[in-house]
Amino acid sequence: MAATDLERFSNAEPEPRSLSLGGHVGFDSLPDQLVSRSVTQGFSFNILCVGETGIGKSTLMNTLFNTTFETEEASHHEECVRLRPQTYDLQESNVQLKLTIVDAVGFGDQINKDESYRPIVDYIDAQFENYLQEELKIRRSLFDYHDTRIHVCLYFITPTGHSLKSLDLVTMKKLDSKVNIIPIIAKADTISKSELHKFKIKIMGELVSNGVQIYQFPTDDEAVAEINAVMNAHLPFAVVGSTEEVKVGNKLVRARQYPWGVVQVENENHCDFVKLREMLIRVNMEDLREQTHSRHYELYRRCKLEEMGFQDSDGDSQPFSLQETYEAKRKEFLSELQRKEEEMRQMFVNKVKETELELKEKERELHEKFEHLKRVHQEEKRKVEEKRRELEEETNTFNRRKAAVEALQSQALHATSQQPLRKDKDKKN
Ligand code: GTP
Ligand code: MG
Image (cartoon, rainbow, N blue to C red; front, top):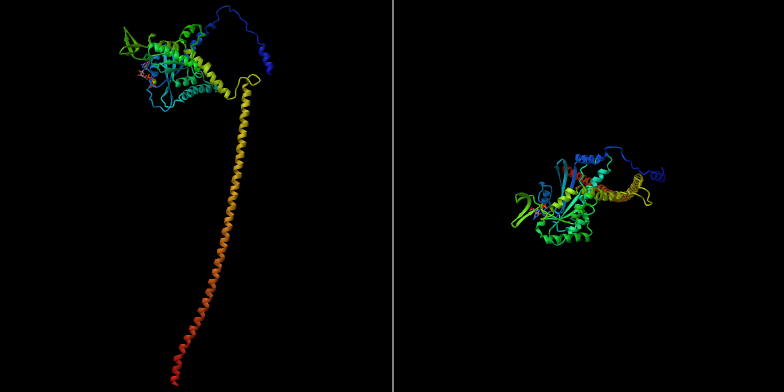
């Protein structure tokens, strides 16, 4: 069917009509079915804690979830920032929560902090990539997939009372398009009330002027719009963490005890811990999960698919066709492959030619060497022959002389043997 026919066909679709029901049908139980299904499936929630070593990350996590997560202290001598995820199964009533706490170990401890944000960004991207790979599989199992995408980044600000460090601004700027950031002022018991007020205003001003987008509690849901709007104005929350229990009046409360008094973690006059717990866990946990999927993951997915050559419409605003894009990519890939093959073939031919030339040169050199040796050999042979002839002549001369000498000797001998006989004859005569 041609595209225009398709358009006409879809344009001709009739408007749905509203009808009233004669009695109870039952699909009003859909929300309950959804709740029941979600409860059976369980939930996952992943928190990333970014803040310098010893700022109180682990203590706050323990305080927030009213438990003790096994964590070890980080050293101040890490060569680079390292992400350490730890997953726990928690249960409250009949709700199961798979909680992952990711610690950015060694953050802010390096002398050169230029690249401190990179391992964090890479970790967040890697979780998006894992999810995307699962989505792109032919046989997907998203239902029981352990979603490790970071739902919230608690950014721990040091309570200096001055301003944000440039490391904080750079890191938050790099993370704000990838994760919901909730900035918190850690160890808020170390800063006075009036200083804290000014510090909060300063921080928010700096975040705005540097274009850092932090997570805003949503105000589009009527049920929570009011409380969320109020809480947005309290950001960044100034928190105190402690798992220690101190007796105040006749109640045991979580607090930090000092010689001059007690800082109660859950006392709203002392710090914003309750506000943070309310907003993070009790009111907006689902929104944080939702925002992660629909905003941050969507952005990652879009960029990644565009990078791979997919797009919703081509230049002429034609609707996107997965098949066409696939075909185009395939053609591009095949022609690239062909080009590479041709390049390699050419390289091979050149190499063979080069080797052939080298071999020929070697052969010529060998031949020359052989000819030279042959000439030398012939010369040697000629000299030896000459020498042999000379020696032969010498031997002949010697033999001749020897024979002559021998003849003379025998003559002389003969002559001497004749002399006494003659003397005897002479005597007889
Ligand atoms: P690493 O994991 O080693 O980076 O440290 P961390 O950020 O997890 O800090 P941790 O929770 O281990 O706390 C470090 C120290 O700070 C401990 O002595 C805590 O008791 C103390 N601490 C934690 N929270 C607070 C707080 O709100 N106020 C004050 N004054 N001290 C705190
Ligand atoms: Mg810790």
